[in-house]
Image 1 (cartoon, rainbow, N blue to C red):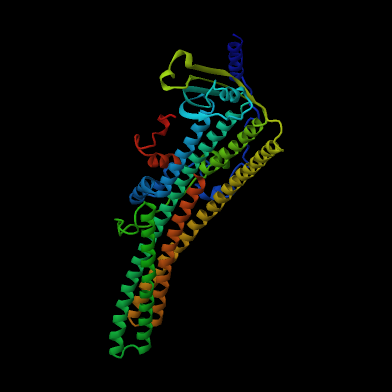
Image 2: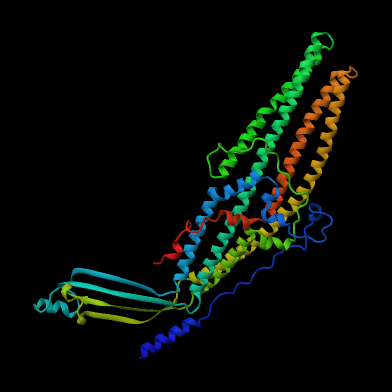
Amino acid sequence: MRQSLLLLGLTALATSACTVGPNYVEPVAPVPDEFTRAAESQEPAVEEPTVDPALLEWWAALGDDQLTDLVRRAMENNLDVRVALARIEEARAFRRAQGGRLLPTVGSSATGGRQRASGQGPGPLAGLAEAGLAELTNDLYTVGFDAAWELDLFGRVRRAKEASQARLESVEESRRSLLLVVAADVAATYVEWTGASERLRLAERNLELQESTLDTIEVNVSAGLAPPLDLQRSRSQVETVRASLPPLRTQRAAAEHRLAVLLGRPPGGLDLRADAAVPVPPTAIASGLPSDLVWRRPDLRAAERQLHAANADIGAAIGDRFPIVSLGGSRGFEAGSLSDLLEAASRTWTYGPRIDLPIFRGGQLKAAVESARARYEIASANWQNAVLGALDEVETALVGYAESKNQEQAFSRAAEAGQEATELAQILFDEGLTDFLNLLDAQRSQTQTDDGHALARIGRAQRAIALYRALGGGWEALDALATPPEGQTSSADSTSD
């Protein structure tokens, strides 16, 4: 009766036990009220920063169906995404293992063998054996069940489970951050591929114009209407333009190969539209408020979850300095022969509480607490540094995108003026009102401005992708694309020990 009352009392105490260590308090993000350059990235009519709806699926906002399809395929097949999913399964399994420590453990065992006691032992068995009244050698068979349950009176196990749950959530957020990185890499590489393709088309078109001019000059030189110097200048210009083609072909092929790898395929073999143009980003991209980054960017949420885990580790370390109380018992059979093993007289049982009290560990437990507190400070600094780094990325991306628009507009005007200058120089040359050097200079200038305009459009698209990535939007849609269909995920959650 006393034992039963003791068990009931310990059980009640376990269910109402305290939890040692500091309770977690979410940190306050060190962010300003608004971005410094936010106004330059959005329409002047916007009175206060708001999150751009296009941020939810920013790759689709670039207006290229082929890019949208590539992002979808990358979410389904990218190998880094697959590794991240496996890491989540690993973290889930560890979390389940920590949670299982709060439950009783039940096991069974069976033994059988032959044993011999010492004939020189201090007990009476040696004397009885010498008198022929006992045997030193005998058989022993046992079978039974045993159970144990640690009463987490001070919350040591609960803090460990809390830490494992926070780390699982951190791994999940890290996967979402990786999805954004992969999507941005796909988009940036696609822009590089389309940019190289477009610059190659421009160079080939300019080469045709230069070759046509060369044919005219050759005729004029043969007829004595132009000096041989014009012919050599024209040939030099033709070969200069021709020399720009191989690097562009190499750049285009390299971008295509990287796209294939991002899609989880061997380099080459992608069926891409050859006439695809550089995606055109929206005119304005609203950045929202700096405080939005803390909940929108998965990498910041992952750092915050690591901070929570480090805080729980302090409680787990403190809990190791308190007594560990557990309930245990066993029930089974023990006999000297198999035929008597399951007889009623062979029954055995034990039950009762156990207390393990750490008295002296050479300062190890205190050092473990100090170490846990230091890791918390490290995690806190890492989180603050991650927030500041995110603000730096957004501010820089805002400046870069605003200036890239200015650069593109300037190159657009330059390209238009260069086209008009080339056409006018051609007319004047055909009518004999100007020499070939002016025409050659106009053509050379047009080639440079056309290529510069293409580079500016590529740069603006790249800057837009960098801004979208820094703002951290779109992970919800990417997470849905990258999540395997039901039935293809690990079934470990439904299994037990």
